[in-house]
Amino acid sequence: MAHAAHASHDHADHLADENNKFYTFVNLALFMAVVTGLELVAVYLPFHLALIWTIIVFLSVIKFAGVCTWFMHLIYDKALLTVLFLSGIIIAIPTSIALLYLFENSDVDAKKIKHGVAAHAPAAETHQSHP
Amino acid sequence: MSAHADATSTDGLLPGSGADLKATTTGIENKKMLMWAFLASDCMFFGTLISTHLIYRKIYPGVGDTEIGRDPTKLFSLELTTFSTFVLLMSSFLMALGVSAMHKGDLKSFRRNVLGVIIFGLIFLGCQTFEFYEFFNIKGLSLQNNIFGSTFFVLTGTHGTHVAIGVFWLVCMWLYSFTGRFTQDHAMDVEVAGLYWHFVDIVWLVIFPAVYLVEFIGKLN
Image (cartoon, rainbow over all chains, first blue to last red; front, side):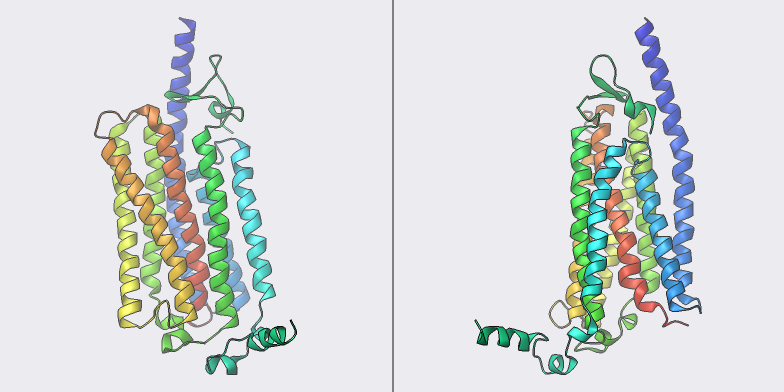
């Protein structure tokens, strides 16, 4: 009897939790719609490029975090799932940034590209001549 | 962290959403754990595609056989892409409501919300198909004729494939919900499908600024 009452109480709590989530989701959806609009507006602003870049990256990170935290239930779930997901992101982002810095414009010979020759062809030839 | 995620009942079951879930050593359903592990790996997959696109945009600026290869702002429709982003965000919202409805055992609400997600997903795919058709047939951009085209089509095409898989998954789930065998016990299955759909959304939230918006910065003012 006590077990049934406890289960009923749990169920009522669970329903209340889910009902509260509804308002959180509505607010978040409205907020993200506004943020998407702001991203579009930011592109047209006559500010310094670095500032516009910063604004757009910041707004995107906010939207990304919003979806992960509330829509994907990370805030309601165990921390292990956050760690698991972050492990992928932590590997992906620094690797991408490192690659962007590793590859430079100066690595490319534009004249050779125009003539259909691969940019790193001389290096490859040198490599072949000295096996 | 919510109480229901941490508590384990005396009979070795996790008090879930009406349907009790089998307890695991981590306290997290295996399906859910597996999906998160997959999403973490998919982050790295999309990370490579986005990086490749950005690196080639950086080291081959203005290289292309066509005019559009020199200036992608003449190619993109910012309004269409913003609309697509909005549609995908709203589909994520409906998916969250669908998952919540299933946890409450409200099958009608689940069906309504998931149908909305499917429709929004199809609208997104329609926009992308229109965009690809226009780029390929009217503006002459293809996988072969331009480095920009190669990386752009591979990146957005892979994302579009993910969206199509998500739509197919949700259509199957939506149809299954009419068989009478789909109950609150399947709340975890819906949640896992929801995680996949939200992931597709957050990937687009990165692609939108990294591929589209970045081309317009400093060119419109």
